[in-house]
Each structure stands twice: as structure tokens, then as C-alpha cells.
Image (cartoon, rainbow, N blue to C red; front, side, top):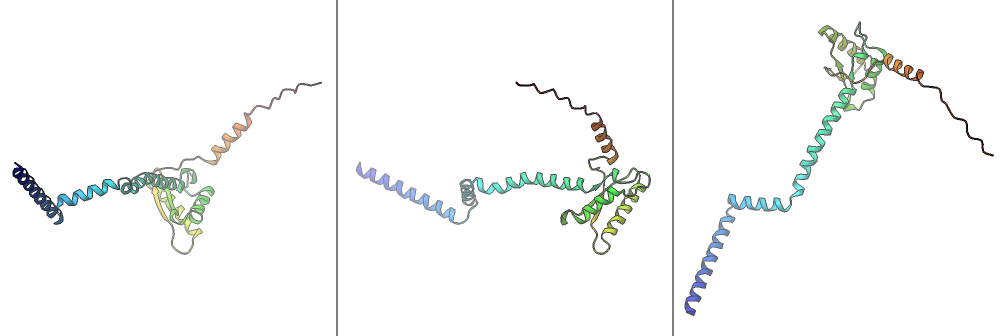
Amino acid sequence: MSRTIILSVSLCAVGFLGLSASAQQYCTDGGDFCQQSRYDYYRNKMWPLPFRAQDTRAVLDHFAVQRNNGWKLHNTIGASMFDPITQQLTDSGKAQVRWIVTRAPLDRRVVFVLQGDAPNQTAARVESTQLAISEIIPVGPLPQLYVTDQDAPGSSGVYQTAITRAMQTSVPAPRLTAAPQTP
């Protein structure tokens, strides 16, 4: 009986060693299974680090889009910056163009002109804006100029002045109660 036990144990050991040797040989030849297993093991072991940059980029991309749209609206020469009859830049429009061309960050020196109701209005607005830019920068490369259909939020100075004056005239006179007399 002891011979049977020894023989069965030795056969199991030889079989186990033979299987492990064949598994090692399988993994050393660069098989897809072993390579993928190693890849998955180390990926799971290092789990949060490989994905942090992607997560950060996914969040920050939205802010970059918002920042670009904000600069686009800020650099838009809207309807209130043009004379409604001649489509020439008003003084405030020229001041806005001057700020964009001279003071905006270099990578943000792009002028957006709001398109008019008709193509000839748009052409007059673009020509007026290009003339204003060329007066500011007579020599050298000029900033890019694009036509847009999004108007910048805002209103004319006349409208804002009327609102401010109406608010100031509607403020009631201050009424203070007399302070109590203390003996």
C-alpha cells in the first residue's frame, strides 16, 4: 500500500511539474493570453494613475470651450457699435477695435464683426472695421477678422444712460426719524 501511495504521489508531482513547465513555456513565447494577463494585472495594480490625465483633460476641455466663446463674444463688434444708417463704426466701436488690436493678449487679437441684415450691410461693416484696424496698425500683419452671427450681449450707451437717469430720479428722499432725547 505504501508503494501505491508513493507511486501516485510521484506521478502527481511529475504531472504537476510537467503542466507548470508547459505553462511557463507558453508564457515565455509572448502569447496573447499571457501578455494580456500581465497588461491587465499591472493596469489594475496602478488603477487610478493612468486615467487621471484623461479625466482632467475631459473636465478642462469644457472650460477651454467656454473661455474661447467668452473671448469671441468680447471681441465681437456688435450692432450697437455701428451707425444704423451708414454702417460705419461709431466712436465706441473704434475704441473697442483699438482695445482688441492693441491691448488684448496676442493669441486673442481676433476681431469678430456681427453680420448685417443684408449682404451689403455686412460688407460695409467689414470694410469700416478693416479701415479702423489699418489706421491703428499702418504697417505689418493685421489681426484676423471674421463675420459672426452671434451678437455680443450689451446695449447702447443711450439706453443705459436713460435707465440710470430713471433710476436716479425715482429714488425717494431719505426719511430719518428723530433720535430719542435721553436725559
